[in-house]
Structure formats: C-alpha cells, structure tokens
Image (cartoon, rainbow, N blue to C red; front, side):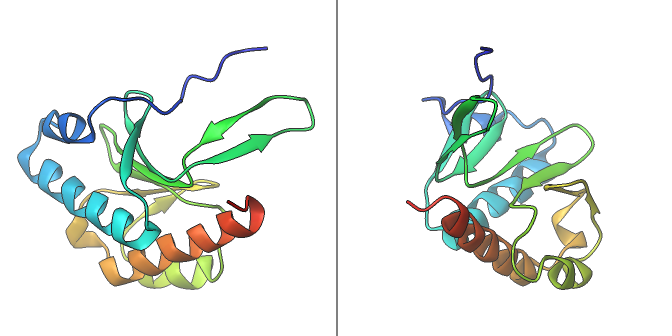
Length: 139
C-alpha cells in the first residue's frame, strides 16, 4: 500500500510562513493562521512541506487505505491561498454566498487576498467545519 505523502511533521509553521516570497501574502497568511487557530481551538502544525493544519483525525477507507489528516488547514499556493475545510459543513452554501470573492472545488476554497473575504464568515466556516469533523470523526 502506498505511503501517505501528507503527514504531520516537526517543521516550523513560522519558517513556512516566513518563506512565503510576497510580503503582503505572508502577512495575510499569518492573519489566516491566527483565525484558524482561534476558530478551531488547535495550534498550527505543518503537514507535509506546505499545509498548515489544525487538529488531526484518522480515516480508513473501505479499500483498507488509512491515515491521518488535519481537521482543517490552509496552504499558500502560487495562485491562491487554499483553505481546507470539510466539504459538507453546516450552512456551507449560505456562508460561501456571504464569504466574498473565492473559488471552490469539492472541499477546497481558494482566495486571492484577505481583502476579498469576510473574516467573520471565515471564522464561522472554520467552526462549522470543525463541528462536522467532530461528528464524522469524534476525538
């Protein structure tokens, strides 16, 4: 069975953030890390080389593949900041409608800059995502 690539590491979150090349993106990412920490109740940890995760859960698929992953997280990518939240959290569509400028995939939400979004809505989204994760994967 293949080994998971995205695992929790001892790497420094601060070093990851400090390495973000664009100064404005770096400061916005720090703000987002603070929002995620406050809203999730967990300290940030590095997962793989580029995901800042909060909390952890263990999953196991019917295929037998299993592993651990962060309950919520974010990453600074070239074209956007990626937010990793549960894809089925309470009021997802309603909150996204109020969130501001973003793009989505199944579970990821992409934002270009902090000024484009409502951070109060983000806090609610993170909390609702954490509630969903607790329901699906109790601690």
